[in-house]
Length: 362
Image (tube, rainbow, N blue to C red):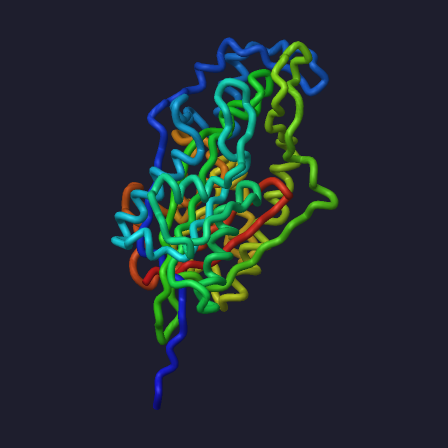
């Protein structure tokens, strides 16, 4: 009997770049925080920062150096992933960069997305091949996971044999210093190399699920003016309705992850690790608890969900691929994945958008 081989997308290399500049919560102790109407928050900034850590578990975050931009961080991560995969960059079929605001000028906050960050990364890597198609995708924090889904389609269809998929953001430059949410976001980049592999059994990227809820939730993450009317910067800042984002994630992410597992004929007990967007530790914990509840499981095993937000902050599109790099390389204590293990990667963010896919370790 002839064995039928199918094409799957397998991660052959990973890389990440965590900026060296460390900013802890004491940095915000002298900030003048304001409400959305411009009124001053009377609570001392130091107390606000302490309360922030209790809510989010973010103690410190990483910031890009002034002479580095998003495309630079993306390039550093890409170089590591390519070296790890041992692939000639000229052989790449696609270079996809997921981000939110492009390269942000550190002096005035202006966003630059022309040419695309993917084109800039291709240039930085010195790739001459015109058939290595470079483009960006913006899907909020779930941008990298969505880019992985796209790359998987290219490979499964036979259109491509390899793809470099990068998630990168330097959102610290888009934060209003008078907004308490300025403490959430950080900078970083991570990348993977996906390559085609023929297999008798499913391996690598399996089935996914995604959803977009623009009608009711369009403006809970958006760009807006500083809360301080005297701020004369023309560029806009990233604004977030934190409570609504929390409620949205808690309401829809668990159901979408279960939908994804159902598509793959898997249950939660089949999953070794859940790599979730590092948005807010308390929110992620609540999402995992609700996911366990969907399966009638009262005892929640938090060890299935690696967390890096305490020291890295929320680097948006870079958080899930950074987790992927660290876990796949065994760099996070207590988190190891082996051949045959199923890993769920999921994210939620501006749009509002959610996605998830199952990855089976080769």
